[in-house]
Image (cartoon, rainbow, N blue to C red; front, top):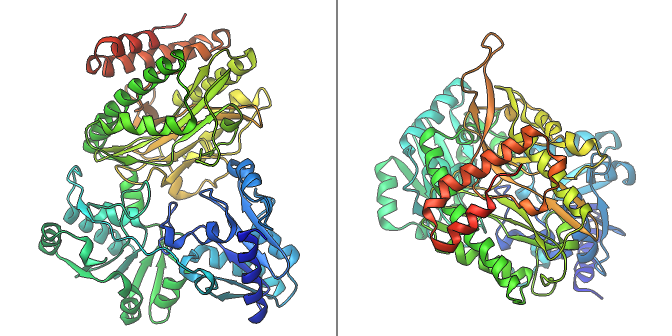
Length: 595
């Protein structure tokens, strides 16, 4: 029997022993992070699915994995022989809807509250109350998981490139707390804590954060973190700035000691376990973490730093793509794994580079049709023959976070591939050129990008854009450009928000095209009208040429050609003087205007 099937069977036996009808396993940790430490990779441990999003639902005689369209092809491969059935998640098929349809009245559903968002607990209880289904807090995985990895203990360091000190940030948070009439604020999301404290770490892959909790009151700022991770100089700076340091493991006991207070939490960013403790003796105020909104709007000083990081990343990318062309022309045998390694090698040469910002996606032909494909030592392709190579990569620099996708031709490509590339480029340009009202819910902008594809009855199963942090998480809220997301108050467009624009076309078992730049919301310069309010536009931050040989120029109108030529002119102006010899000539050729 497959090892994952064996683990699922063992879990089902524990469920029978405790009379549990269904058990929900999330991709989550106590901080509700996107990328999680190995210790918390429960879903991957029991089911073998390695994608970054998905939920497993197990009953006494059934096991299913729910994941969205980005991962369907990947999941079909990884779930073979596991006893898990792939459930293609969309608005019509979710774990909750399956539970409503398949569990009987008075059934018992269990999950681990330590990794369950409070908002999801409420949703589960609300959706399942008609069938009188009981929701219970159970941790079965600890009983089954032998040789579980330890929690990380990597060192913490100051983020010296932050132009705003932590005392200023805490003062702003206390003002927000006062406006909401909160006496305490409990923060458990790692990127919010890192931002507030101006500290960074490496406890989580790709995100420069560290395991911790932060409590702010009118008088105190308490950081719950393992003290051995903090160098003495950093510790002294924190003490000087009024911080108290307590052990990471003491968060629950401390929360139990708080009585008769008004405590601000974000229900989407706080676990049910912590919320249940706080609710016992306090009044809960639920609102978006103020730090989430504040850090999303980058200051001019931060944007200057981000633009400097983009230049460093652009230099690395130009050198990489020139190397790739040369290596293939020389007949070198290159794999998708080599792409990942070589990109990192060129970025390592750049100033302020720390790490990749996510796992590089290098997908050739059919592999590129999987939006979140990742080559592994067990399964990868060589870059040979004809086709399209999709490369989605990013980096963490101490002065900015990058994320870029480009597609390059290998050998001879077909007219159909050129057409797909050009249609995706048209979609990318359409949104890049958009002008929109200040405060519009950013999910509503998605249709601007998709229009070029919808005209041809094409679409893609992921969002068009996500927020990006300042040397923080590559996927950062609250803004999002996706019609799959509701147009909420917190998603409204503000000046300084950095987002991706990344439309795509994916043809299963053939090829994929995605073209991605990062942009920032800026006020329109020299507005034509003023009586209808303030309008914003996107300023492109990413610096790397598109592949002109993939473009069917006849499909572009004059406005699209002008945008592309102006973008390429900007790329050469900002990078040209920083490249020498053949690299500079390579970039000059790649950025020459099209007619």
